[in-house]
Image (cartoon, rainbow, N blue to C red; front, top):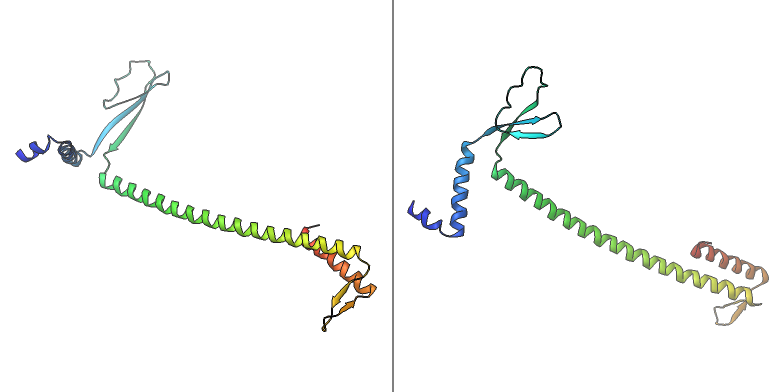
Length: 169
């Protein structure tokens, strides 16, 4: 007892004594009746005493008896820990989602850049094929092989299809 008294002089001792006293009291109290009443003007009142009896002819009060049980501190701590664990898990999941979203955005940007480059190349190719009178390809021996008019028309059509594919026209 003397040890408890000495430890109460410190802040931690006061907290410890309060918790010990609270645990002792909470184990003995299980429930308390609380009365709720609403008057004619709609005012709500809560009390631990039953309302007074009404006089003859008066409208009776709307009384609701509530039973309140004291909460279990261990259950509260467990619920709090569970909520914190869920919050940590949700935070990790959000970080993963954000990373995936960032990677997806980077991949999409790279695809769009490649598509724009291909579009520019296809347009330049069609412009070149439309402006020149003769087209050639390099032969197996390194010499130029000039295309016929039908082959040139085919190459121009292929260039136009490439623009449709890469530029979305």
